[in-house]
Amino acid sequence: MNAELSERELISALATGDVAPEGLAAALAFASPEAPAERGAGSAPVLAPPPRGNSDLLEVAMGPHHPSTHGVFRMDVTLDGERVVRLKPVFGYLHRNHEKIAEQTSYLGSMPYTDRLDYFCSLTNNWAYALAVERLAGLAVPERAEYIRVITAELTRLLNHSCLIGFLTHDMGTMGTPLMYAFREREKILDLFEALTGSRMMCNYMRFGGCRAELPPGWLEQTRSLVDEFPRFLDEFENLLSTNEILLARTQGVGVLTRELAVNAGVTGPMTRASGVNYDIRKVDNYGIYGRFPFRVPLGEHGDVYDRYMVRALEMRESIGILHQALRDIPAGPVIDPKAKLRGFRPKPGEAYGRIEAPKGELGFYLISDGSPNPYRYRVRPPSLINLTILEDMCLGHTVADVVVILGAVDIVLGEVDR
Amino acid sequence: MNPPPGLGIVKGLVETARNFVGSFHDPARLTTVQYPDERLPAKENARNFPFLVYDGPDSEKGLRCVACKICEKECPPQCIYIILERDANGKPQKHPRVFDLDISVCMSCQICVEVCPFDAIKMDTDYELSRSDRFGGLLLTKAELAKPNDYYRRIHPTEAQEVDARLEEERARAQAKAKPPAAAAKPAAPAQPAPA
Image (cartoon, rainbow over all chains, first blue to last red; front, side, top):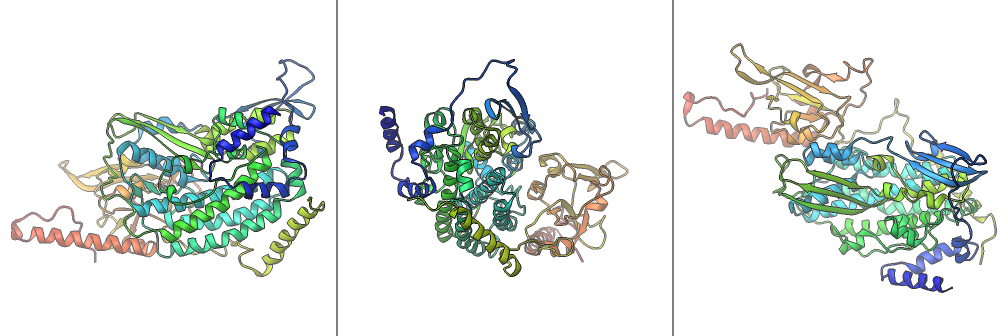
């Protein structure tokens, strides 16, 4: 009981002000039939990995072409009947040498490659890289460009979270219905991206010191109407899923990630917030102009798959709020620093780390410049990869079918994991 | 208070039914476009692969490209290959003899367009590019890449208008500069021959 108390103290210490305890508690309370404390503790007995060569166990390689692995990813699972007793994630099939290639090309030349890290969220990748280079070179970003960045990043978060929920339910066997609803909404956002950047997914839109192009005429109005319409879709989505008994049975108490492990493993993003850690880089760093927008950070209590689903659903509503404010306040002006140059860009020797709250977690770029046109060292801190490292801890003791759901809730994109 | 069992599923089925019925009359619920028969309206900013712009009727003489090789150097996946034209004496001609672009390598990032100081290379919007030969067919040569300025005006009207205005201004400035020393001076260097 003492441990329980200290845990609670930790929550209250972590939850400073901007949490939505009532909202989330209400959302979680109506959804969970049993008491919250039972749900977190009861299910997953952590087993010690058995010695190799035990003939009663079955080793199965899930992947690299398994449809549930969200890409080219393999899990070597050791099964005792249906239960997982050991799980080894194997990745690297999609390794494209991103970091070394970036050390050979100019700073600008790496920008289109960042689109291909997390190919669902190219605009947040662009932003993280642009932020790192701007810190390295000391470039200022015009006001309007900052607003455009916030708008595009929050739209990216909307499409990422809605699709992730779609994929997650797909992993549970919904035969694609919620996924197709999510894709329908995503398509509208991608149309906006195409009108703005010229490309649906590989946007390549941010530049060092601003954004590449001015907003096309009518774009803000279209975005406003999309943002006004989006809560209707969210309501529909939550009616469809949040109280669905099958979804509750499949997700509650499954894949519990404790707060301590989440913090120790460096897990970020909705994953760590679902475990109750109040860590959102938009609040912690206030990068860009996020300090201007009041928004709440939804936190989970149990750290199970259901909380990860719910945190994302609630985060989308907060994104809508940010979008409303940003679309209202966006000023006129240039979209790129007039001093920023495209060619012959040589930052002074030094190092910089730029990080943002990408939809999947902390996305950071670490750069060292030696004064030459290309970075001396270029390193990506991908949220997907680091969130994936604790997969075994979440899966032990669960069945194979649950492993699929747990992996689905981590939200990985293999382009980013393998780079 | 727990809701009655099964209520969540019923609520979900109501949503599904609403979507199903809506797909018969509500365009917001049925968004499928029957592609080869129907097409979405083209977006003005859309981009696919680069092409070379030429002024006037002759795709060879009117080519804006001066073979400065900036795009070749800046292209991140290195998909552009340029050889400068030289006359019989080996003098550079400000014209590409070879301009190849491998669209199986190109990633449509439009950095070539951004760095080009002569507005010679622009992004195309044509996306129906299937070829029977996956090696030679996807390696576009200068002749395949060259497209008239009118085509550029048609696919990117706003952008083309800006470019035309800018080029016109540069040309006027170059002419004004060339005039004072009268006919003795050499012709203005950066401007291209005026289009019809």
